[in-house]
Length: 119
Image (cartoon, rainbow, N blue to C red; front, side):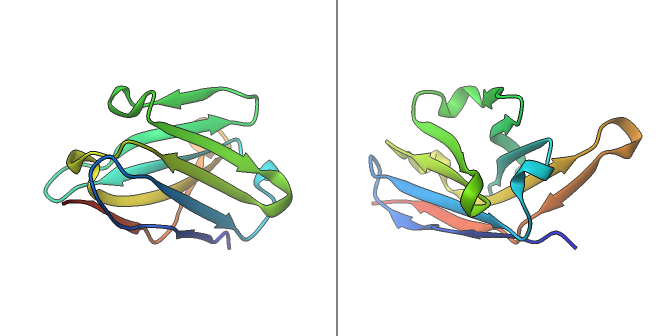
């Protein structure tokens, strides 16, 4: 059973920074893609950033230029560096790992970490 454990959330002032970490229970090279999603109260979960292991990156328009997704294969960890945070970034952030494609695709989720941007 794949486990994804997020950490690094917290309370930060507008304009501040946080780095989220997602540690996987197995080699992240075994996944086809990993990413970060977020869900604010009364809103749908949305993609924030993702990367595939063919080297393709994808960011939500609202975070481009402020957030950076990266990975450390040796540590089986994916990161989300968040700079210039805004109140609208407040949400629970979830790590996602994806394996397979089409009807064989399997998604794994972490438990989520709260990010609150407020003065």
